[in-house]
Figure 1: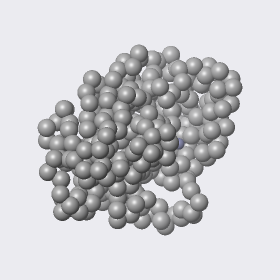
Figure 2: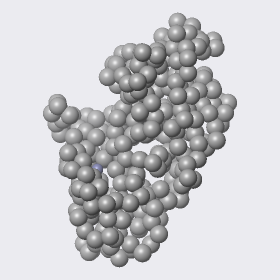
Figure 3: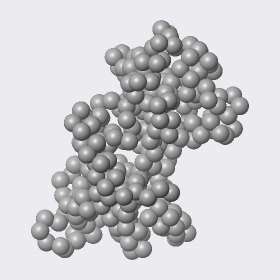
Length: 291
Ligand SMILES: [Zn+2]
C-alpha cells in the first residue's frame, strides 16, 4: 500500500461495510462443486476500473474453543498490523507442535471478481446472473497468464469483454489427491457470444456490480486479537494460553466445516504439508515482508 490508510478512512470503510453486510453477501458468491464445469465471463468495473478485482488475505481455522470454523480478513490486506500473523511468526520459531499450530493459523491469499454466469450446472437460477467469483492462486495464475503472461496475445483484454469478441472462463473443479478441489484445469476459451447479450444489457450489468471491497467484514487489529484469544488460546477471562496443550487434537486447517458460507474453496496445493528449516525461513521472510 503506497497511500496512507488513516484511522478515519478505516472508520468510514467499516461503516460502509456494516451497511452492506446486512444484505448478506455470502449468498452472492458463486459456489462450485467437484466434478463440474462452470462458464463465466469476467466483468470489468468500468466505473472504477481499479476495483475490478479485489485482492485480500484471509485467516480461517477450526476454533479450539467451539469447534466451529472461524475466519477473518487479515488486517494486512489494508496495511494494518495483524495479531494472527504476529502469532504465526512466533509459533514458526517454536517446536514441532508450535509449527503445527502456526499452520493452523494459515494465511491465504484470495481474490474476488464480478462474473456473468453463462452456465452453472449446480444452479439453473444462477444462469445469466451476476455473481461474485472467489478464487485462489491457481485461478489467479490462469488470469495473469491470460492478461500479461504466456497467453496474453491470445486473450488479453478479451477476458473482460462481454461482447461476442470476449472469452469465457471455464472453471473446472477436480479432486486432488488429498480429496480437495483443484482448479488447475480451468482455462479461458476462444471468443464467443453470450446468448441474449446486447449493448443495452451490458450497460445494465455494469451498473449492477457488487462492491467487492465491501463483501467481507473488516475487523480491526484489536478485534482480530480478540478472535485469536477466544478461538485459538481459548481464553475466557484468564490470560493463560492453552493452544499448546491442545496440539494433540486433530486439527486441520481445512477440517470439517460447519459454517460453510464463510469457508473459501480450498486450493490445498498452496499449502506445503511439510516445512523444512529453509522453508520456514522463507515463510518467515515472506511474512515479515507482509507485516
Ligand atoms: Zn494476518
